[in-house]
Length: 350
Picture (spheres, rainbow, N blue to C red):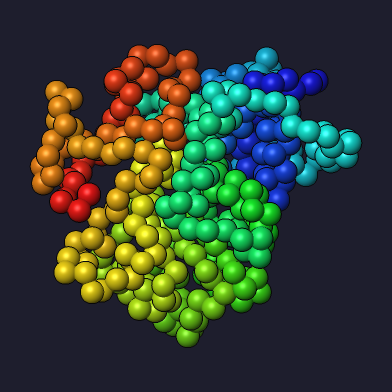
Protein backbone atom coordinates (compact mmCIF):
# COMPACT_ATOMS: atom_id res chain seq x y z
CA UNK A 1 0.00 0.00 0.00
CA UNK A 2 1.06 3.62 -0.43
CA UNK A 3 0.37 6.76 1.57
CA UNK A 4 -0.65 9.80 -0.48
CA UNK A 5 -0.86 13.46 0.57
CA UNK A 6 -4.00 14.02 2.62
CA UNK A 7 -4.34 10.38 3.73
CA UNK A 8 -5.05 9.94 7.42
CA UNK A 9 -2.77 7.86 9.65
CA UNK A 10 -4.17 6.97 13.08
CA UNK A 11 -1.86 6.31 16.03
CA UNK A 12 -3.32 4.29 18.90
CA UNK A 13 -0.32 3.83 21.14
CA UNK A 14 1.32 4.85 24.36
CA UNK A 15 4.24 7.27 24.31
CA UNK A 16 7.26 5.93 22.47
CA UNK A 17 10.12 6.99 20.24
CA UNK A 18 8.24 5.34 17.37
CA UNK A 19 5.35 7.74 17.94
CA UNK A 20 7.57 10.69 17.02
CA UNK A 21 9.08 8.82 14.08
CA UNK A 22 5.59 8.07 12.77
CA UNK A 23 4.42 11.66 13.17
CA UNK A 24 7.24 13.15 11.14
CA UNK A 25 7.24 10.32 8.62
CA UNK A 26 3.56 11.01 8.01
CA UNK A 27 4.04 14.76 7.73
CA UNK A 28 7.01 14.34 5.37
CA UNK A 29 4.74 12.22 3.16
CA UNK A 30 2.01 14.87 3.29
CA UNK A 31 -0.32 12.73 5.40
CA UNK A 32 -2.52 13.72 8.34
CA UNK A 33 -1.95 12.44 11.88
CA UNK A 34 -4.99 11.14 13.80
CA UNK A 35 -3.82 10.81 17.42
CA UNK A 36 -6.02 8.43 19.43
CA UNK A 37 -6.01 8.57 23.22
CA UNK A 38 -4.32 5.40 24.46
CA UNK A 39 -6.72 5.26 27.42
CA UNK A 40 -9.76 4.75 25.19
CA UNK A 41 -11.47 1.38 24.93
CA UNK A 42 -10.50 -0.33 21.65
CA UNK A 43 -14.10 0.01 20.42
CA UNK A 44 -13.95 3.78 20.95
CA UNK A 45 -10.59 3.89 19.16
CA UNK A 46 -12.00 1.80 16.32
CA UNK A 47 -14.83 4.29 15.85
CA UNK A 48 -12.29 7.12 15.48
CA UNK A 49 -10.20 5.12 13.00
CA UNK A 50 -13.31 4.40 10.93
CA UNK A 51 -14.76 7.92 11.17
CA UNK A 52 -11.48 9.53 10.13
CA UNK A 53 -11.16 7.23 7.12
CA UNK A 54 -7.63 6.35 8.21
CA UNK A 55 -5.68 4.43 5.59
CA UNK A 56 -3.25 3.15 8.20
CA UNK A 57 -3.43 2.63 11.97
CA UNK A 58 -0.17 2.37 13.90
CA UNK A 59 -0.47 0.70 17.29
CA UNK A 60 1.33 -0.81 20.23
CA UNK A 61 0.10 -4.14 21.63
CA UNK A 62 -1.14 -2.26 24.69
CA UNK A 63 -3.65 -0.71 23.99
CA UNK A 64 -4.08 -1.64 20.32
CA UNK A 65 -4.02 -5.44 20.20
CA UNK A 66 -7.81 -5.78 19.89
CA UNK A 67 -8.16 -3.14 17.20
CA UNK A 68 -7.72 -5.48 14.24
CA UNK A 69 -10.73 -7.54 15.26
CA UNK A 70 -12.98 -4.48 15.55
CA UNK A 71 -12.09 -2.12 12.72
CA UNK A 72 -13.75 -2.97 9.38
CA UNK A 73 -11.28 -4.37 6.84
CA UNK A 74 -11.95 -1.54 4.40
CA UNK A 75 -10.47 0.93 6.91
CA UNK A 76 -6.96 -0.01 5.86
CA UNK A 77 -3.85 -1.52 7.40
CA UNK A 78 -2.99 -1.95 11.07
CA UNK A 79 0.72 -2.15 11.90
CA UNK A 80 2.34 -2.61 15.31
CA UNK A 81 5.26 -0.30 16.09
CA UNK A 82 7.28 -3.34 17.20
CA UNK A 83 6.55 -5.41 14.09
CA UNK A 84 8.92 -6.33 11.28
CA UNK A 85 6.57 -4.49 8.91
CA UNK A 86 7.08 -1.19 10.74
CA UNK A 87 10.84 -1.81 10.88
CA UNK A 88 10.81 -2.37 7.12
CA UNK A 89 8.94 0.90 6.60
CA UNK A 90 11.60 2.71 8.63
CA UNK A 91 14.43 1.09 6.66
CA UNK A 92 13.42 2.72 3.39
CA UNK A 93 15.60 5.53 2.08
CA UNK A 94 14.41 8.81 3.60
CA UNK A 95 12.54 11.37 1.54
CA UNK A 96 14.96 14.03 0.36
CA UNK A 97 12.42 16.76 1.03
CA UNK A 98 8.95 16.80 2.58
CA UNK A 99 5.93 16.69 0.29
CA UNK A 100 4.90 20.35 -0.10
CA UNK A 101 1.74 21.25 1.79
CA UNK A 102 -0.24 24.49 1.84
CA UNK A 103 -1.03 26.42 5.00
CA UNK A 104 -4.68 25.36 4.87
CA UNK A 105 -3.93 21.65 4.30
CA UNK A 106 -4.82 19.47 7.27
CA UNK A 107 -1.99 18.23 9.51
CA UNK A 108 -3.62 16.95 12.71
CA UNK A 109 -7.11 15.47 13.17
CA UNK A 110 -7.73 15.44 16.91
CA UNK A 111 -10.89 13.90 18.35
CA UNK A 112 -12.49 15.65 21.32
CA UNK A 113 -13.41 13.72 24.45
CA UNK A 114 -17.03 13.28 23.40
CA UNK A 115 -18.50 13.84 26.87
CA UNK A 116 -21.87 14.80 25.38
CA UNK A 117 -21.93 12.31 22.50
CA UNK A 118 -19.61 10.98 19.85
CA UNK A 119 -16.20 12.67 19.67
CA UNK A 120 -15.78 15.36 17.02
CA UNK A 121 -12.71 15.48 14.79
CA UNK A 122 -10.94 18.83 15.14
CA UNK A 123 -9.21 19.72 11.87
CA UNK A 124 -5.89 21.45 12.52
CA UNK A 125 -4.08 22.75 9.46
CA UNK A 126 -0.36 23.22 8.92
CA UNK A 127 -1.03 26.94 9.32
CA UNK A 128 -2.67 26.31 12.69
CA UNK A 129 0.30 24.26 13.89
CA UNK A 130 2.76 26.88 12.59
CA UNK A 131 0.91 29.64 14.47
CA UNK A 132 0.80 27.56 17.65
CA UNK A 133 4.54 26.87 17.50
CA UNK A 134 5.57 30.48 17.05
CA UNK A 135 3.09 31.65 19.70
CA UNK A 136 4.92 29.35 22.10
CA UNK A 137 8.17 31.21 21.50
CA UNK A 138 6.45 34.58 21.86
CA UNK A 139 4.16 33.95 24.83
CA UNK A 140 5.29 30.83 26.68
CA UNK A 141 8.99 30.02 26.53
CA UNK A 142 12.13 29.94 24.44
CA UNK A 143 13.71 26.66 23.35
CA UNK A 144 17.40 26.01 22.69
CA UNK A 145 19.20 23.08 21.08
CA UNK A 146 20.58 22.10 24.49
CA UNK A 147 17.05 21.66 25.88
CA UNK A 148 15.22 18.34 26.21
CA UNK A 149 11.49 17.84 25.70
CA UNK A 150 10.27 15.26 28.22
CA UNK A 151 7.09 13.34 27.41
CA UNK A 152 5.35 12.64 30.71
CA UNK A 153 1.89 13.47 29.32
CA UNK A 154 0.25 11.63 26.39
CA UNK A 155 1.61 12.43 22.93
CA UNK A 156 -1.96 12.10 21.64
CA UNK A 157 -2.75 15.46 23.25
CA UNK A 158 -0.92 18.75 23.81
CA UNK A 159 2.35 17.12 24.79
CA UNK A 160 2.49 15.62 21.31
CA UNK A 161 2.03 18.93 19.55
CA UNK A 162 4.58 20.59 21.82
CA UNK A 163 7.29 18.48 20.19
CA UNK A 164 7.09 20.78 17.15
CA UNK A 165 8.81 23.67 18.93
CA UNK A 166 11.66 21.46 20.04
CA UNK A 167 12.11 19.99 16.57
CA UNK A 168 12.24 23.51 15.12
CA UNK A 169 15.07 24.39 17.50
CA UNK A 170 16.97 21.11 17.12
CA UNK A 171 16.47 20.19 20.78
CA UNK A 172 16.50 16.72 22.32
CA UNK A 173 13.49 14.48 22.96
CA UNK A 174 13.17 12.14 25.93
CA UNK A 175 10.56 9.39 26.13
CA UNK A 176 10.90 7.99 29.67
CA UNK A 177 11.20 4.27 30.29
CA UNK A 178 7.94 4.38 32.25
CA UNK A 179 6.19 5.74 29.16
CA UNK A 180 4.41 8.31 31.28
CA UNK A 181 4.48 10.23 34.53
CA UNK A 182 6.78 9.20 37.37
CA UNK A 183 8.06 11.98 39.67
CA UNK A 184 11.34 10.25 40.58
CA UNK A 185 12.06 9.61 36.91
CA UNK A 186 11.38 13.25 36.03
CA UNK A 187 13.73 14.61 38.70
CA UNK A 188 16.40 12.12 37.62
CA UNK A 189 16.12 13.16 33.97
CA UNK A 190 16.22 16.82 35.00
CA UNK A 191 19.66 16.27 36.48
CA UNK A 192 20.79 14.12 33.54
CA UNK A 193 19.65 16.46 30.75
CA UNK A 194 20.42 19.73 32.52
CA UNK A 195 17.59 21.60 30.78
CA UNK A 196 14.33 19.68 30.78
CA UNK A 197 11.01 21.00 29.45
CA UNK A 198 7.68 19.29 29.99
CA UNK A 199 3.92 19.77 29.91
CA UNK A 200 1.99 18.78 33.03
CA UNK A 201 -1.58 18.78 34.25
CA UNK A 202 -2.21 20.41 37.66
CA UNK A 203 -2.54 16.99 39.33
CA UNK A 204 0.90 16.05 38.04
CA UNK A 205 2.42 19.19 39.55
CA UNK A 206 0.79 18.34 42.88
CA UNK A 207 2.49 14.94 42.79
CA UNK A 208 5.84 16.48 41.81
CA UNK A 209 5.69 18.85 44.78
CA UNK A 210 4.71 16.05 47.18
CA UNK A 211 7.62 13.94 45.94
CA UNK A 212 10.04 16.87 46.22
CA UNK A 213 8.99 17.56 49.80
CA UNK A 214 9.40 13.90 50.73
CA UNK A 215 12.71 13.35 48.93
CA UNK A 216 14.41 16.74 49.17
CA UNK A 217 14.46 17.20 45.39
CA UNK A 218 14.90 20.80 44.23
CA UNK A 219 14.07 20.46 40.55
CA UNK A 220 17.69 20.77 39.46
CA UNK A 221 17.92 20.69 35.67
CA UNK A 222 14.19 21.23 35.11
CA UNK A 223 13.97 24.51 33.20
CA UNK A 224 10.28 24.81 32.30
CA UNK A 225 7.04 23.12 33.31
CA UNK A 226 4.10 24.31 31.24
CA UNK A 227 0.87 23.54 33.05
CA UNK A 228 -2.72 23.48 31.88
CA UNK A 229 -5.49 21.11 30.94
CA UNK A 230 -7.52 21.71 34.09
CA UNK A 231 -8.02 24.06 37.04
CA UNK A 232 -4.96 24.76 39.17
CA UNK A 233 -5.61 25.43 42.84
CA UNK A 234 -4.03 28.70 43.95
CA UNK A 235 -2.45 27.09 47.02
CA UNK A 236 -0.91 24.35 44.86
CA UNK A 237 0.88 26.65 42.42
CA UNK A 238 2.05 28.93 45.25
CA UNK A 239 3.55 25.89 46.99
CA UNK A 240 5.03 24.61 43.73
CA UNK A 241 6.95 27.85 43.22
CA UNK A 242 8.09 27.83 46.86
CA UNK A 243 9.39 24.26 46.59
CA UNK A 244 10.69 24.09 43.00
CA UNK A 245 11.34 27.71 42.08
CA UNK A 246 10.58 29.81 38.98
CA UNK A 247 9.98 26.99 36.50
CA UNK A 248 6.26 27.33 35.78
CA UNK A 249 4.26 28.83 32.91
CA UNK A 250 0.50 28.43 32.56
CA UNK A 251 -1.41 28.05 29.30
CA UNK A 252 -5.10 27.78 28.52
CA UNK A 253 -6.35 26.29 25.29
CA UNK A 254 -8.50 23.47 23.96
CA UNK A 255 -8.40 21.05 21.07
CA UNK A 256 -10.04 23.63 18.82
CA UNK A 257 -7.27 26.18 19.54
CA UNK A 258 -4.51 24.01 20.96
CA UNK A 259 -2.43 25.56 23.73
CA UNK A 260 -3.21 28.95 22.20
CA UNK A 261 -5.81 31.04 23.97
CA UNK A 262 -4.12 32.59 27.00
CA UNK A 263 -0.86 32.31 28.92
CA UNK A 264 0.46 33.37 32.30
CA UNK A 265 4.19 34.01 32.07
CA UNK A 266 6.91 32.62 34.30
CA UNK A 267 7.41 36.11 35.70
CA UNK A 268 3.72 36.53 36.51
CA UNK A 269 3.53 33.10 38.15
CA UNK A 270 6.43 34.05 40.44
CA UNK A 271 5.54 37.70 41.11
CA UNK A 272 4.39 38.39 44.68
CA UNK A 273 4.73 42.19 44.49
CA UNK A 274 1.72 42.82 42.26
CA UNK A 275 -1.13 44.29 44.36
CA UNK A 276 -3.52 41.63 43.04
CA UNK A 277 -1.05 38.80 42.55
CA UNK A 278 -3.35 36.15 44.00
CA UNK A 279 -6.16 37.08 41.61
CA UNK A 280 -3.74 37.07 38.68
CA UNK A 281 -2.25 33.72 39.69
CA UNK A 282 -5.75 32.23 39.99
CA UNK A 283 -6.54 33.40 36.45
CA UNK A 284 -5.49 31.85 33.13
CA UNK A 285 -3.46 34.91 32.15
CA UNK A 286 -3.69 37.18 29.13
CA UNK A 287 -4.54 36.49 25.49
CA UNK A 288 -1.63 35.08 23.56
CA UNK A 289 -0.26 37.36 20.86
CA UNK A 290 -1.63 35.30 17.96
CA UNK A 291 -5.29 35.51 19.04
CA UNK A 292 -8.01 37.87 20.17
CA UNK A 293 -9.99 36.85 23.24
CA UNK A 294 -13.33 38.30 24.30
CA UNK A 295 -16.26 37.54 26.59
CA UNK A 296 -19.62 37.20 24.87
CA UNK A 297 -23.27 37.11 25.88
CA UNK A 298 -25.60 34.42 24.51
CA UNK A 299 -26.77 36.78 21.77
CA UNK A 300 -23.19 37.25 20.54
CA UNK A 301 -22.67 40.75 21.90
CA UNK A 302 -19.28 41.41 23.47
CA UNK A 303 -19.34 42.09 27.20
CA UNK A 304 -17.26 44.70 29.05
CA UNK A 305 -14.63 43.98 31.69
CA UNK A 306 -16.03 42.49 34.85
CA UNK A 307 -19.03 40.75 33.28
CA UNK A 308 -19.25 36.97 33.03
CA UNK A 309 -19.94 35.24 29.73
CA UNK A 310 -18.60 32.67 27.30
CA UNK A 311 -14.95 32.88 26.29
CA UNK A 312 -14.59 33.35 22.54
CA UNK A 313 -11.37 33.46 20.54
CA UNK A 314 -10.25 34.11 16.99
CA UNK A 315 -6.89 33.99 15.27
CA UNK A 316 -4.52 31.81 13.26
CA UNK A 317 -4.39 28.82 15.65
CA UNK A 318 -8.17 28.31 15.61
CA UNK A 319 -9.26 25.08 13.91
CA UNK A 320 -10.58 24.89 10.36
CA UNK A 321 -13.71 23.13 11.65
CA UNK A 322 -14.96 19.69 12.61
CA UNK A 323 -14.33 16.71 10.32
CA UNK A 324 -17.43 15.91 8.22
CA UNK A 325 -19.60 17.86 10.67
CA UNK A 326 -20.62 21.20 9.13
CA UNK A 327 -23.48 21.67 11.59
CA UNK A 328 -21.22 21.48 14.64
CA UNK A 329 -18.62 23.65 12.87
CA UNK A 330 -21.19 26.37 12.18
CA UNK A 331 -22.40 26.26 15.79
CA UNK A 332 -18.89 26.51 17.24
CA UNK A 333 -17.31 29.03 14.83
CA UNK A 334 -19.53 32.08 14.30
CA UNK A 335 -18.41 35.20 12.46
CA UNK A 336 -14.82 34.01 12.80
CA UNK A 337 -15.04 33.52 16.57
CA UNK A 338 -14.53 30.15 18.23
CA UNK A 339 -17.07 29.69 21.01
CA UNK A 340 -15.16 27.67 23.59
CA UNK A 341 -18.02 26.56 25.84
CA UNK A 342 -16.01 27.87 28.82
CA UNK A 343 -17.22 30.72 31.01
CA UNK A 344 -14.95 33.55 32.05
CA UNK A 345 -14.47 37.19 33.00
CA UNK A 346 -11.96 39.73 31.69
CA UNK A 347 -10.61 42.09 34.33
CA UNK A 348 -9.30 45.59 33.68
CA UNK A 349 -5.79 44.19 33.08
CA UNK A 350 -7.04 41.84 30.36
